[in-house]
Each structure stands twice: as structure tokens, then as C-alpha cells.
Amino acid sequence: MPYKVLVVDDSSFFRRRVTDILNKDPNLTVIDVAVNGIDAVEKAVSLRPDVITMDIEMPLLNGIEAVKQIMAKAPTSILMFSSLTHQGANATLEALDAGALDFLPKKFSEIAKTSDDAGSLLRQRVVELAKMNGSLKRKLAIKAQPSRVTLSSSVDKPISKFEIQPRNTLRTTKVEPTHSEKIRNQTVKRSSGKKYQLLAIGTSTGGPIALQKILTQLPQNFPLPIILIQHMPAAFTFAFANRLNTLCSINVKEAEDGDILKPGCAYLAPGGRQMIIDGTATLAKLKIIDDNSEKIAFKPSVDISFGSAAKVFSGSVLGVILTGMGSDGREGARMLKGKGATIWAQDEASCVVYGMPQAVKVAGISVLSLALEDISQSIIKEVDHG
Image (cartoon, rainbow, N blue to C red; front, side, top):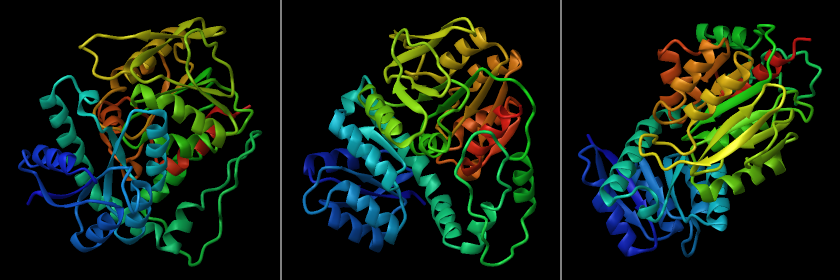
């Protein structure tokens, strides 16, 4: 049976265009359209679609508020359409905070070079989000059960010289952990004793929220520089870096050509360009270059940044692959591991899309698969063993 899609936009032209594109895939069917946010909420509740495509600027109720209400009343995988402006970027990030899972530029000419390629990408994204819809509802249902939530929060607080928000250790009822939970609780206590000079994180779909959850838990005196590679349009990365900087104790900035890597600072690769580490491990700096190559699908590319980190820092890198579609990061992580670096991956249950973490796990590159909520504490334990 095809996945059911609800298309939400106040423009009749855009509604027809998106509907025509999606209906070309036999795995998708547009069951209805909504012309404003209130209409979207009502139809999300009554029709229970697998995916909703959502505009941001609409009358009566905007897309951000509509997302909040839908996630409260009828949780659904939501894809936002956004303008590639500073205002559009901030609004899209707010929508992701509210519960939307992914976004695309509203102008299809900004998605791909041809309309056919843009349509193919849109259909691919919607199908992936449709597959996530069932697990999304299961995750939200589990979170609604206090005894299960408190169990996953009962891991011993790590002993660290870095300050970190303590976890809630209260339980409403005692629940014996499952086998997988026991394994996960063991992994977050593990520290290899290895010395690191860089933390490198790569991600795509679902990455903005994942990065926010991890980085906001790192202390101000975090001892390593951090590079962040997030698949994101050029107009978004400056706004996203600024947003993270206001939320985090560490410093976060959009990377600039010539930036010298400093401990306690995270450098977000600018959209539409490549971020390369140059210099030496003791004096590493960033090169930001234009990339017009058609052979490289992603700009920025996790593979390119991770590969350059392998050349400069050799094995002194902790690399983490988070949620994302595709396999970008696998070859860069392979290069890092070949130099002796440590690679972790986000686990399937906590990913929006398991493509990128699965690629490094299946290839035998990652040594741990961690739930998103455990990654920040695990990073702190791994780099703090003095």
C-alpha cells in the first residue's frame, strides 16, 4: 500500500506541483491538501497521513505552530519547505525544534540542477520519512511511559573533571533492563584511555536536533576542538551556528578560511563549500574551498573533512557519525580508522534516518553504537581519563 502524504501550502500552484511530483512514485499517494495551518492540524488528526509536507508562512496558523500542534495531537513525519534566506533559515530551525524531521528549499531550482533531479530528491526524502513514521510514533509512545523513560536515564553519572548536567535518577517503578539496554549501559561506561586532539562529527537528516542535544551538554572547558559537518544549504549554516552558539557553553561558529582550531570551540562547515583541515596537529587551521566537482554529491562532505583530519591528526581523532541519509562519512571514517582513530555511530533506534551510521557500522568501521542521549556523556568520559 502506498504511503499517504498530506501537502500543506497556501499556494494552489505549489500544492499542485508538489502533488504531481509525489504521485509519480507508486510508493506515494497524496491523500489530501491543506491551505493553512489550522486546516493542516485538523486533517493530520482525521486522516493520519504517513508524511506531511509543510510550508512555513501561511495564514491563520503558520507552519511552526502547526507542527507543534500536530506533534502534540497526531505525531507525524513532517518535511518543511523553506526559503533560503536568513529569516527562512531561523524559521526552519524553529520548525525542527518543534518536531519536524527534515526540510528542503521551496524553490526547486535550489534543490538540484534540473526539475527531474529535484523531483527525484523530493520523492526520496518523503519515502524515507514515511518509513520513519511508525518508529517515530513508537518512540513518542515509549517516552510517554515514565517507567521506561526513567530507566534509560538511570546510567551512573560519569566522574569527570568537566562539569555536566546531572541526569535524572528517579524511577516511578522498578523495571528490569532488557538485554539491549544492559549492553548500552555498559558501553556508555567504557573509556579506552586513548589521547585525542580532535572531535569530528558528521551528520545529515535529523542532524540539527542531534547536534544541539550533544553540543549543549558539553562543558565550556571541553579540551578538544570540534569540527561539525552537517549537510545543509549555504544560507542555513551561519544561522545554525549562531543558534548553537547561543545555546551551548562551548563556542560555536560557522567555519571561515584560516580559522585556527582551538579547544572548546566547534567549527560548522559552511553550506555549499568544503571544509579541509590543514597544517599540523599542534597548529591546525581550516581551509574553506569552493567545490564545483560533480563527482562529490555533498557540499560540505563528511568524507572530505574526515579524510583531511586523518592526514593532519592521524589516529588522535574521535569521529562520530550521526543520523543521516546515504553513506557520506563512511570512506572518511575508514581513512581515520586506518590511522588508528576511534569511530562511533549513533544507534538505529535514536536516528531519524539510519543511513550514515549504518554505513560505518556495516563496514566494520565503528566500534560503538550509542543512543543519542548517551553520546555527549560518552564523549566526555572518553576524552577525560587523566
